[in-house]
Image (tube, rainbow, N blue to C red; front, side, top):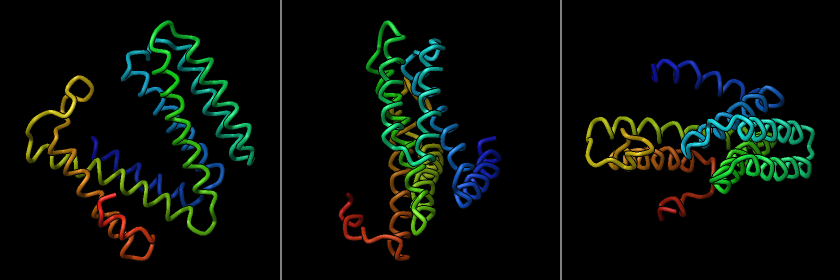
Amino acid sequence: MRVVAALVLAPLTIAVAWIGGWPWACIVIAAAALLYFEWLMIVGLSGNRLAAATGIAALAVAGVCLMMRRMDLAFGIVAVGTVLAAALVRERRRWVASGLVYAAAALIAAIIVRRDADIGFVALMFVLLVVWVTDIGGYFAGRGIGGPKLWPRVSPKKTWAGAIGGLVLSLVIAAGFALLGFGKMLPLLLLGT
């Protein structure tokens, strides 16, 4: 199922990233909402529907503000949404706030980077490919090598071998981008930073 989903979603994501504009913003807003909700699940707060809805609404409005080139409003909406969402829970308020800020950072970066007409698409492809191959490398290294679990309470199947395998494959892709001339960071990459 995972492979089938990737084979369908990866080309769709690349096509929408190529198109950019509002179609890309809609995908990014949906992804940021899922990211925030997943964060709430990890910290055990997904049952608080009001905090979830408040955060997701803030992300959606912030995304629209970014597309209207009103970064000031986007940051203001995220700030107000963060305070409201955190106020709607009795415990773990910092976790709610940090989760919304985390999702908003991904939202803001993905929309702003794509707006660059010269390198926006290539920069997005770099990030997406590094993330995807980290997941793929981690999956195959973890299954093939096995070993001690990374964080069993949060993700029971992830292993240290998988984490290292994902890291190594992501560095290979990053080096490939640098060698093809899509970045001037090869010296830093070779130093492991």
